[in-house]
Image: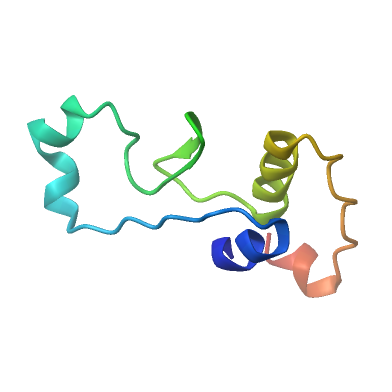
Length: 83
């Protein structure tokens, strides 16, 4: 999801993945970074400790870039069943 949105909006996406134990060290907490999984946009913590729906993430990207929010997409039957 993030790489595709990064291409769509021409923004740099950095993905950091570490073993769970590394996120629970004192050194990590001293960095004042969010709890994984997390999404940050510049210095703003968008979400931490959980997932974020794609439409919400796209709206955050647009707000950060000064663009109008994207039009909500109509959900098909399966999209409504499996929120």
